Image (cartoon, rainbow, N blue to C red; front, side, top):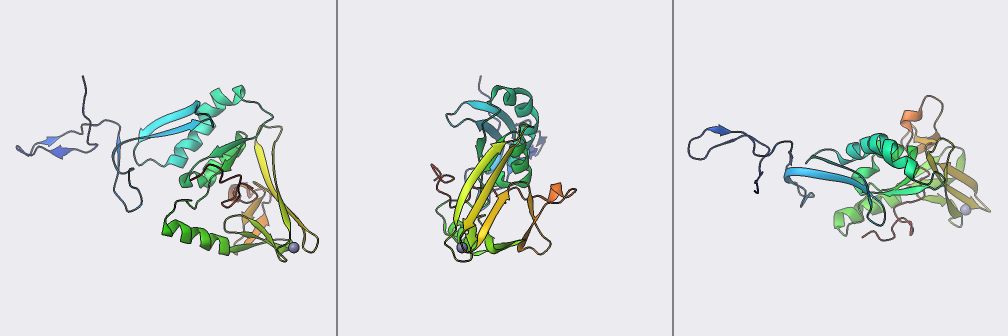
Length: 241
Ligand SMILES: [Zn+2]
């Protein structure tokens, strides 16, 4: 038997006007917008964590319109921690790739806590004018780094030194508690050295300045600072269309 479930809403019968119950139980609804082609309508959303060779690790089916990053964050904290973590190599750092919704701070923090470095960007790589404009704006934006007057971090989280001859290097490791830390280091003969480690920096009240996270300020950490898998990084963009 095949059942058709096409609406999450109550609806009036066309002939009698009688209010009929929703045909779909547990589903959700997302209205059509300019930029959500293929995602709008009644139904469900599958949020799945899979390995790079397509082995499913965790998955939840939730009502359409649910916040994807919140679902993924909950999965990392619950079923991933309970059932998956113990089967993975505790010495290796994983990479969690996701599209723009997964650049949320809650997801970044949860991914780090289970040994993964996120490869997600708030800017889409999509070949649309709006995305390209957004990416260029982020490239042109700069944040000063407290104590490192000759270096800036761009809106795409890339390090640049004043003379622009500096080199950068990526780092990643697992800590004793199983969490991952990534780093983005820079050095230059003229401009000196800098090393940004994920979880250790936040935006200051002056929004164009980055400062170290002090004890008690952990919830303000911006986990994208120090993440070396930046928007324009060749490794981060490998295989991304
Ligand atoms: Zn320099």
